[in-house]
Image 1 (cartoon, rainbow, N blue to C red):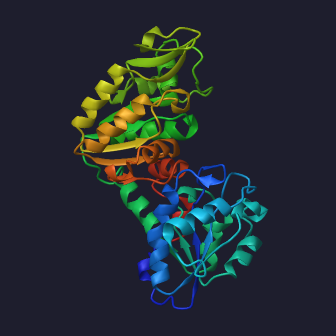
Image 2 (cartoon, rainbow, N blue to C red):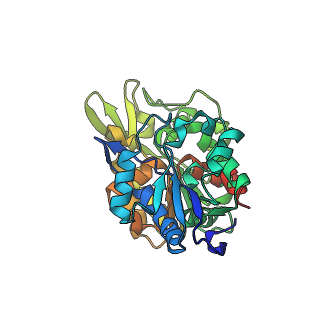
Image 3 (cartoon, rainbow, N blue to C red):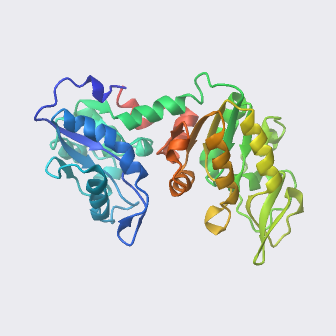
Length: 354
């Protein structure tokens, strides 16, 4: 990738910077500014080179969200002169963005002299501001994008061993290929979250009313792999009670909410003997009272003498809430993008910067 460090002269030029400020907002206030702060090194570098900036971001899925709370938050935490940085409107407000329309991209390109992608977390999308703009303007990678690529690449380019991969969450279709890949690359693959329900069900266990996928991903073959580790106990919601029980004792009316105490102890032992821990996705249904184990394990990884790479929207939200961003070797801004990158080794938006 061409880096912004390679740009010779920016004086008087305008940089179109694709950022991802798609952040959670409540009562018109930004709840978590992690992604905004992650883009500041790139923005400040370009400003020091005397460039003017137009920041391009989306907010929400359909483009109806107003950027005002994001803009307010950005200027509050960056202390940047508003005359030097302009915000384009919510990019998804325009149908041409998600349709990847060349005419829309051409119109965007007239606003600037160079293009900078610092939005790793949307670089898996074939959208106009991600894959067409870099064809129309000299294109460079921002610092956050470079950091993401460098750190996440450790997982498949000569990773340190023993290597523990922890995978949680519920996105079955995107995560199953990762389990297959990392059963070859890692020494241990621990599966938690809703993903584990599928594996427990395939073992013939009752999973009650828990979330399971309706697709067969060849789990039976994976179960034979000795590197695969499943929670031996779980926390279930039974009526209004939370009960810790063995994974094979779940009843028909119960819902698995989290991994159990023994599973946490087992995972703690694996963390202790690992040199690299890669983690994506929460280990429980944390919005329904299943956050306990994820928080415990986050604390254990944070103090362990390991290289720790953590990603996934929900996991990162918990890290931010616990104010632990600096306790890990690297915290990725990407959810789906991180999964795609770990599975494929590149992304559409990254290919365009080569």
